[in-house]
Image (cartoon, rainbow, N blue to C red; front, side, top):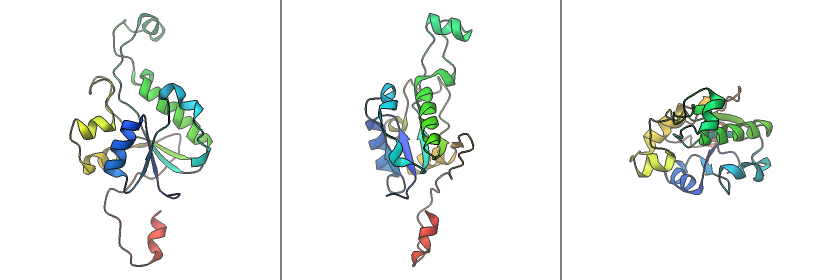
Length: 169
């Protein structure tokens, strides 16, 4: 589906959950090896695509060295930008922008609002989200660095009865 928008999540469990609920409209994918292997994946194949990234919603607390560096107390929640899932997806967003992609980032809950590691799989399998709730989250995504990819329309595909549907891609 070379013209379909992409949803990139962290981990196969999330890719499977995302595909099950929005795979009819988006190509959902991840990369092998987790956050530390992000730079080992070849992202050139998605050059120029419209991409939405969904980070894990982590709630990690600061260890002593991190706390000193960030000017917070040891044991306090790390700021959102220092949470592992957000850091990984922000690195990926940079890679995707260099590949000419238009990138949007799902606005995940703030650290501490959900259990540590909450992700699309937890939203669907634990919280019981349906497709409408997932699409709502995707529509609330924010453009990255002026990337401006259009958020997906969660409505059903239009039946044009001719080839005009191609203009929607």
